[in-house]
Length: 93
Image 1 (cartoon, rainbow, N blue to C red):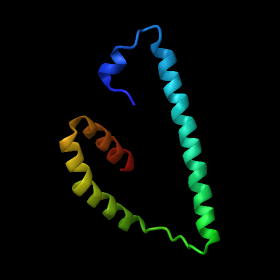
Image 2: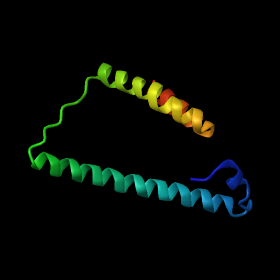
Image 3: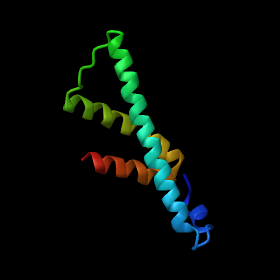
Image 4: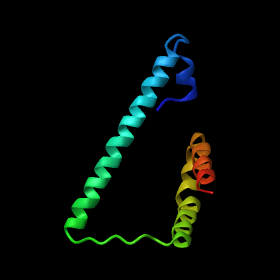
């Protein structure tokens, strides 16, 4: 993660390589996270854990509660994070 000011300090000729490296690292990490989540889920299912999907309305209610109780306070404490939470909410809509 890098802030706007940190990104501005990177020389223009190096910026494309830094951005590509960041994108590559992000994609790599997401792949590992997805594989580990799948593996953990399979392991838990092997131990007899049964997964039931949460109904959409219930999931939305929990997400809204989290946004009000947790995310709003976090964004208030760390104002630079607010656009991230807004983008997440917009993506969910």
